[in-house]
Structures are given as structure tokens and as C-alpha cells.
Length: 319
Image (cartoon, rainbow, N blue to C red; front, side, top):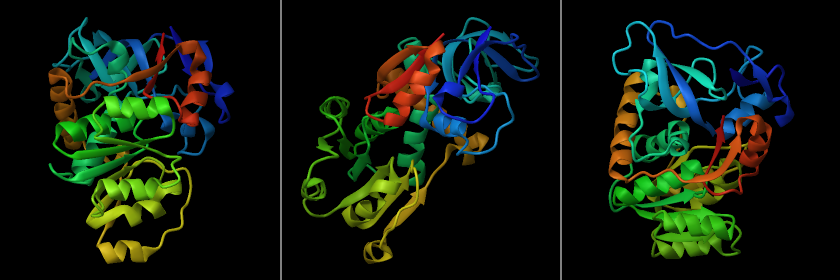
């Protein structure tokens, strides 16, 4: 089978398409034939050597969707031929065949395409966790999704709107603003607007925001604190470096800055999150938006696109 392999840290060109042996499932493992593979920013950081150590060579990726082709001893929930998506793999997802622990495999409803299935694992679980686990967002509150046009952002917009929150989303392009509004944001605000903070504050009637889901804290966190209502919460989903803030902005509002990482989720946490996501997928509340589809051999191009951050929707590879 073919898989992307990384033999050294570096730029996107270190992603090489190679022939590797087909996997067989071990105890409690599931082998999935991939029909679509999700590309996440964290995989570009890992490839570049800025996010944790890795043994070489390795195959990147955690998210894919496809059909079960084989199961190991002890697997009870899945049978060959079943449509599934993964939220974690044992040997990487950028491949024609993927091995995952049974607990990391989830049924894919018939109404959800394979490309959409590949956009669930990291983006949708991150959005759900940020909103409802870390921020404890409640119906009637106002949430700002700061960077709403990407995979995580659009999932957060959809989930927040369905949960009864007032949703404000930001994006950097006209196309991004359109898709944010189409997917349920009550208001869409341009990153580049000269009076962005004034616009957002006006949309809250001067009260401020209850929740901010922040995709780029190194650029926005200092401003975020100024936009919060009393006892508001910022959940930091992403950051590409340090930031200077004024702690008094948090003190005066009794506001919280809360970090999150899916790596900290327990197995029980993951079961809860994916049960909720499964229900949302089945009833149409959650509908991942696909922005860019590229062949597996173009994984390097996909990494360039994901780091640019301008393309609305999810970036997906197909074998």
C-alpha cells in the first residue's frame, strides 16, 4: 500500500509517498481502508519538528474515514464493510490503510460523506470540547469564534448555534465571511476591519462576550480580554508563539483564560464527545464543510495550504 512517510523534520517537501507493507490488526485493533484523510495544522507543526518528538520514519495524521477491512481479536463494535471515521490512529492516517484502536473508531452515518467524515476527529472534537467542556457555554450566552472559517471554527459555529448561543464569527476573506454566515453565525466580522473590536462590542450591546474560542492566541489574546463580559472565558485552541497581555483586563472582569488540548482527554472524555458528535451528525446539526480536496501524493501542498489559513473549510486528502 502507499503511505506518506517522514524521515526527518523539515518543510512540506519531507512528506514522501512510499510503498509500505499492508497492516494487520492486533488485539483490539481495526484496519480501515481510507476514502478520505483529514489534514490538521498540528500535523504541520509535528512535521516541522516544533511539536513533540517522533521516531523516524513516521506517517502523520489522526483523522480519516472509510470502510473497515479487518478487525483484531476482541473487537466487538465493528465488522468488515462498515462505514467509519477515526479520531486517532496507531501508525498515522496519511495512508491507504490505517490501523486504529477500537475506541478511536466511530460509526459514520450514511448521510455523511467520507470527505466530511475525515473532518470530524480533530476539528469537531476540538470545537465541542472548547465550547461545552472547557468554556461550559450555556444557551443564551454570546460566543465569539475567532477564526471561524476553518475546520474547527465552522464546527464551533454550527454546534454553538444549535445549542442556543448567540454566535459571532470572524474571518479574513469575503469567502470566509460568507461561509461563516451560511453556517449559522448571527454576525460575521472581518479580521481586517479597522474597528473590529468596536463592531464586536456593539454587537453585544456594550456588555461584552461570554465566551471566546480563540484559534490564534499569539495575535488576539490581548484584545480578547478587553472584549469579555464579567466572568467571561477565553478558550485557547491554537497559538503560534508568545503573547503579552495586561492581567488587569482579566482581574477587572474576573475573566478566565483556559487552555485545551485533545491530548489531555481521557477515554471516558472521548466517548462522551463522540457520542454527542455522532448524534449531531445523524440529525444534521453538525455538517462538516470541505474546502480543499487533494490527492494523497499532494500532502506537501496540503500542508502549505493549512498553514496559510486562508482557505475556508476543511482540507482533505484522498488516496
